[in-house]
Image 1 (cartoon, rainbow, N blue to C red):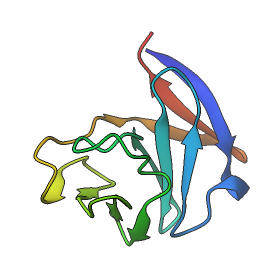
Image 2: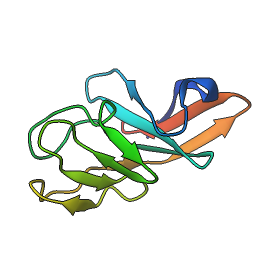
Image 3: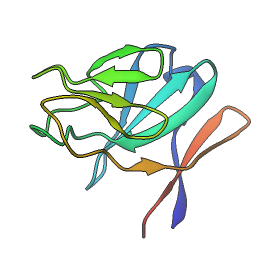
Image 4: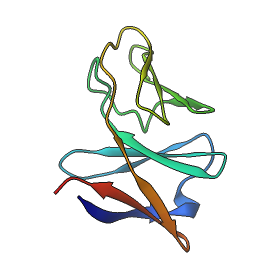
Length: 102
């Protein structure tokens, strides 16, 4: 695992997602000034979760409305049935880092 700088805290506004573009895209979220990272791809239809609708600690996929917990990656509603992976996040100063697989 490697700590990778994803963005700055100013890039992560409450209620919006941020996509870390890489081979396996990661979605980052700010929930009450806590930062979370999950796979950016909906497990139902491969849509970007960073572009989804965020309410509290839930993100809803914009295509078919599957919902996931931002904190745990758990599926909260159909049509998705598989959770998304989560990644550890740390903040140093104004920089947000995600612990990603090598």
